[in-house]
Image (tube, rainbow, N blue to C red; front, side):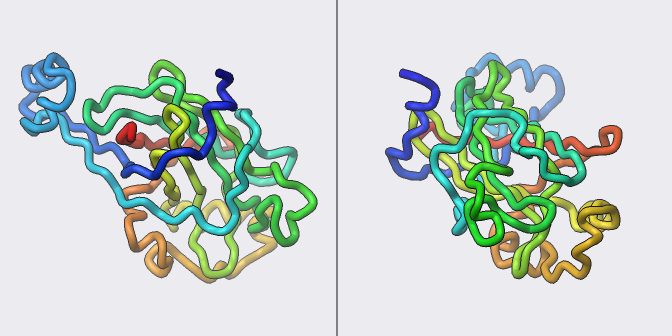
Length: 230
């Protein structure tokens, strides 16, 4: 069965969220957690995986996106590399071969396949499989804003052909302010919604925040997501 064939949408959504991994009690406790292999470590409190709420898919999802790393298709914007990790929420171990599916607005706040972006169904959309470390990476641009929503990236995680998470990834408002001072973002000032005013962010977005660091003229955003395999 090909990788693409495994990306069917059969099955129901299971809970997923951001991993908060901690080893309690120093090196000995960490070793014990690793040795116990998962559920026992979680039950004992040596390893903690906290699941965030599911967040809405939104109206702009298109199934069957391209399997590719660079999703920009030449659209302008500040470079953003995404490092998205998937782990088993019961064991905190990485899941290899999960399909991470992302989509977001371009720097002008436009989604491919809809409205002003209707002539293309592919820009700012793509799927990547996770490697042996549970990591999927993308090259994109910092998303633009559109009316009524804070800045965000949509994400789905597929494991074994089932969708095990639908969520959204968010950015620190101060960082967005800084990015938006430069073109092409500065051509569209006065974004109307920040995190605290966003109806979706307030339902769990604090636990779906990307950790973003400067990388040359661009940024790298990272997050680790803990999933139940379903």
